[in-house]
Every structure is written in structure tokens, then in C-alpha cells.
Image 1 (cartoon, rainbow, N blue to C red):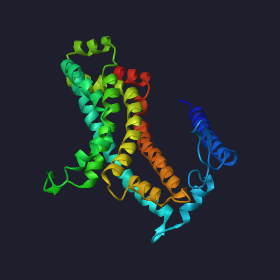
Image 2: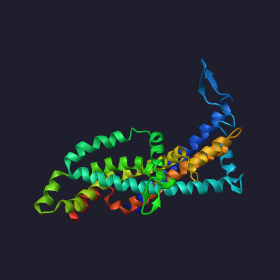
Image 3: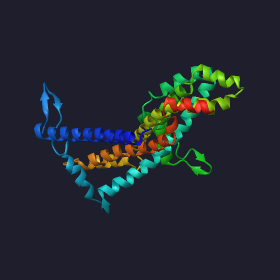
Image 4: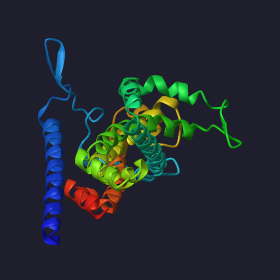
Length: 298
């Protein structure tokens, strides 16, 4: 790969991201400046939002509010602490979801009857809303003991978030494990390769181009799941609960609330950045050509 070309591609992507951000900020401030404070209604239905500071603060106030006092600390420090708490739970949920998803994919690839019987339920599982699942998992507290340790609230958040994270991994990994051409599989069989050797030397490398996009989706889902679980279970310490706290304080100015929402969005980018490290480690397999070379070296 040409290093200069790779650097240029990354610069172009960064430029697109910056341009998109500036566009959003421009639209935000244009709406703030042009739309009446009480919005625009048509036939009794509001078609444009209110633009008061309680509903739509200026972009710069969302950033300047980070230096305001919040008890014994500042708003920025509070958001950093709570985002760090949720970041750890999201990573744990991503790890659990990845392990469960990969295990299910391997099982379904190995046994066709398991795929036919299990895959529909995996798909249907994602129709269950987290707001209904969260109280059930949170109710395990005081009833479940693991290695002498009682079930804690943060464990419920990790399990609930992993419930969202495992699905894209399971589906993407299954598709990847089934990606190798039939001729390649038969070639390894002709060499008397066992199912395990075929899995390690052929199917796993071939699955990477499908696994990495699924992992990115799982990373975003783990953050969403962790934030929603914190709100649904009422667990303090995370960014999800902090959003509720700031929303209750937003009477005349919602800058703190928007700052918390922005922190949650940046948290998703941070977790996705961790996934980028996995992509760097697996970069030789990240394209079908790389997977084909790996099969040739096997």
C-alpha cells in the first residue's frame, strides 16, 4: 500500500467529517437566528421547533458551559467522569457481545440445523425493547451471586448493552464464516484438514472483512445500550443518568443538557476508536484479497 495515498485518503475523510460538522453547526445557528422563538405552527401543528435558549441554545454556549460550577467541580469534569464510567461499561458490553456473537456464529456455521433453528430467534430478539428488558435484568440484584460476589447494578448495564452488541457480530461473523468459496473448503478437505484447522486457517481469515463492519456497529450499539440501561435502571455514575439530571435542571437554559448529549456522542466515537485498533491489528485480512493471500499461505 502506498503510504502517501493512505495519508491522503485519511486527510480527505477527516476533511469530510469536519465539513459535515461545520454544516450542522451552520444549520443550527441559522435556525436559531431565523425561526421565531416559539417556532412555526401550521394548522395547530408545529412544523419548526422553538428556538428559545431552553429549547435550542447557541452552539458556543454548549461549550462555554463546560467551565461552569457543578457542585464541587465543573460541568466539564462531571461529564468527563460520568463518560469514563459509561465508557468502561460499553467496552465490557462490547467484549461480552463479541464473544457471544462469535460463539453463536461458529456454532451456527458448524451445524446447519442450529442455524435454521437459532437464527430466527436471534433476529427476533432485537425486537424486544430495552426499556422492557432493563427492569428484568436489574431485578437480578440480590438474587444472583457470582463467585461469592452479589449482582451489582453495573453488571446489569453491561448485560443489557451486550444484548444489543451481540446481534451484528453474530450475523456478520456467520456471513463471514460462510464466505470462503466451496473450492477452497474442498481443497483443505483433500489435505485431510480437520474442521478446527479449516476454521482457523480458512474461515476466520475470510470472515474478517465481514467481522470488522459488524464490530463497528456493535461498538455503537454498546454505547447506546449502556446509556439507555443507565436511564432505565436509574443507575447513577454514568453519562446516561447525568443526561437525566441536567434535563431536570434545564428550566431556562438547556446548554448543560446538550453538553451531556454531545459527551455521549463523543463517547461513541471513543469506543469506535478502540475498534479501529482491532482493525489495525487485522489490517492484512481487512480486504478479500488479504484473506485470499492468507489462504494461499496456509
